[in-house]
Length: 242
Image (cartoon, rainbow, N blue to C red):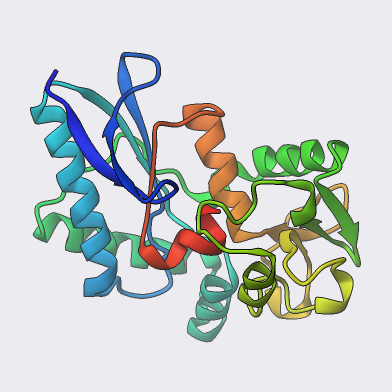
């Protein structure tokens, strides 16, 4: 097939794109959080991803394009509560709207479009694995990722340790006193009264997954531990893609 070259965030250079297994490009794309209508900036990302898939296919390659739906987080829970709807009904309505808008823009459907709530057992298993490896710790019913246990943390976004600490403000769980370090982010969030009926049982009590955990578990379960391409909005480089 013809060579396709793409700008790589980690190296800040243009590099050839290739499928590691020599068969199909494994492409995980961070999709929408379905709590409201996607705006033009959101769809710019999805249009670019769609174009990339088409270019790869036109060059003669095959692709497995996975684009997730974030259907449980602070925004979806708050939106469902304000709309006086069950979480699933609320997010399905906005998912349908997203699909209609994507169709109007001529976007292809991805190979898979997993929802975070469909992978709760896998997310819990991943947290357990991280705990066993010393990369996570439990505090006040929540589980946090221990950033200092991962030596290359910050290299994707080209941030030093000080910038990582400063960038963590407002991006982790609100209970900053439970964390060992300010940069540590939540993997599993302990249940709070405002969560209402939205919770799952876990080894650490009632709660729900954190955003970063959701995408990691879905990508690994569907595509394996190594993927060829990870895409999303520029605002997701740190800390989500990191």
